Length: 445
Ligand code: SF4
Ligand code: SF4
Image (cartoon, rainbow, N blue to C red; front, side, top):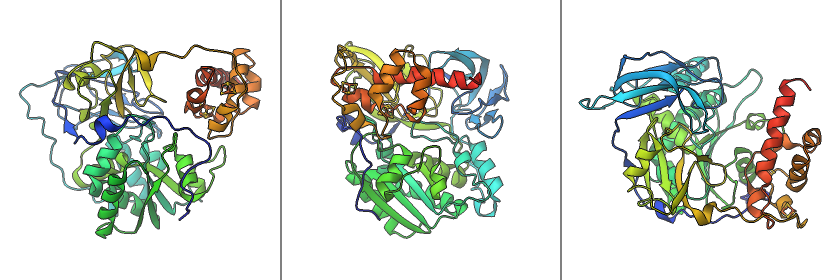
């Protein structure tokens, strides 16, 4: 294992994890209504297999995948489907969704199922099974996990990397999962590791979570889980959780532009996703809930909650004592890459790692000044882009040149904006450039 335990460049925002990292995860009570947008993840939206008036039980399939890069959705609650109709998505758009009214008399127990015999499954059966479970990357990206577990002809995976970095400020949901369920995390890794045929599992955890490192090391030392498991602390730096950067930190290997970790014989999986894999194969529990960190200076009682998917954001805050009078804005996800919410009635999604309430002082954008050519944004960019130039090109609407300057390699981590002393909204400008480049590409320009 390498002694270098970080990637090059990046930034060091304040962690703000104290409010929740020591709080045991608790379960959110059921609320009267749930809304499940059909596009919960990257890829094609799922297709509803229920209609208004149907009775559903918790864990029942309510939308099936459409195509390969798509994932199933299950009822988070026992109740009645009241609508399959457009509802507000966290991104602000109206999208097709399934709305379920909770049965107030149901016990909401998940049906008990026998463990799935994953050892007897062919690789294709295993991949389809994960797709049917509705499991997506729970680190925030919500990429359908089964796609990663499908190894194309001519490729192989020799290493499974579990991502426990959790580099976004405020978020501690992965931290709590590792601390409270280290066995489940490693059991998921065992199942995945055997399916993929890897020889080694490496867990990368930022050094600010020493108790999680200890918990996983202790669980690994029991020898219950097949294979070779190494739990490796990495430097606390943003965006350490980006999978290519975690690989760089752990192995000093660079995944070239346009390639995937699999090109280096690796599959990277979030630790929460690994726990979800264990729940599915050992207990037949599909993805119907997730751990969400509720934090920020604008919430009364920060917490880590197990929240059924589809729960309205406003109800989650109510469960945490509500928003404080000084709260001025809410972000879904982390503060660096999360989605600001314009409506608190939108639902918790599969990719919702955090709900953060901020006051004016965190939300106020610094006054913008001219670029002083300090070069800090170049030193921050983990992909060695020239953010300052990209921002200038976007302002000048010189879209084609942005492509020449590799705008599509930008992962929109926001490290450049964070570090800029002139308050220039660099990543926001770059996002516009990427969107125009995508449109032009689709028009064949
Ligand atoms: S240019 Fe993109 S990848 Fe580079 S720091 Fe800015 S947002 Fe991150
Ligand atoms: S950090 Fe800001 S001021 Fe410094 S070079 Fe980049 S854009 Fe210019």
